[in-house]
Image (cartoon, rainbow, N blue to C red; front, top):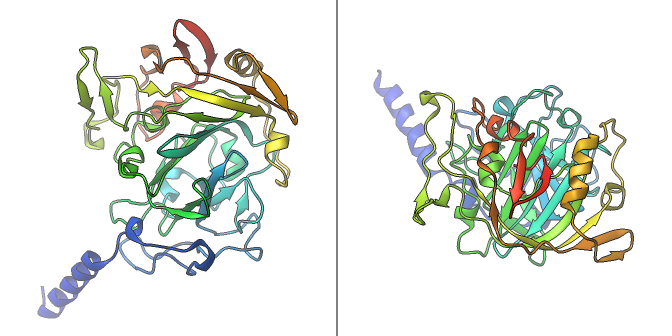
Length: 362
């Protein structure tokens, strides 16, 4: 190699080492730069932009600034073009949101068929079911993970920012993860002032999906907002002997993940308030998503428990039973892509404290 080429290589390496990781950058929601990522590395430059407003709000928006605050105001990352596959577009994914006014694309009306929003002492989380073809993903895509890291620390998507109003004011969330695929999703944003944000929003378990990264009561046909306890750190579990263990995800070179040594504990929830999608999501563009299947709707009704009061068209219920773990029979599927493990568990049945509470949980 010529000396000049050596100098050029050294300069590139030095530049890469000097670049500030996306998760370490500070941003003000009301004074965002056009692009959060100004680098030009192996993956090129940032696809979209972060300064989003009324002039960028349309179904072709390339806004890469997401929000997650409550059951009516949250986003997911998805493809900018039809028939996208998460594994191919994670670096270029754009924000699709439920609330107008963010300068983003809007998730079409009726595309979302079930949601649980959860606020815990350490994070806020939204999980549920969605017709992913209406947010530009292929129907068969098993999906994958987006987070603020990536191998080059520039994030997936590159320059993708997340903010939340869940902790007073609109604050930047530096640790988060979002799994999309198999018509399901989970998006967790960890309290930026919390001592364990990096652990609760771990990003190294990209091949085992929502079932282990965001265990919750996934019930199609139900829309609810709850308070709850924090989950175990992803990958951390207590074995049958009572010993705390940490799971190590095998590299993809070893092939698909066919089994897991543990079942993730589902955190208990309380003060759940249910409503209908028409009350929660207003101002969304028309969509063509099919209604949940009768089996899923029936199971969701069973899972809802007794209603204790009615408030403006919504109902409140309490689910304060002891924390539980999913039945092992929901974890027997093989995994090829990041989200297949979760998708294969959709048809499973979860038993909590010996009682059937529904299908389509993870």
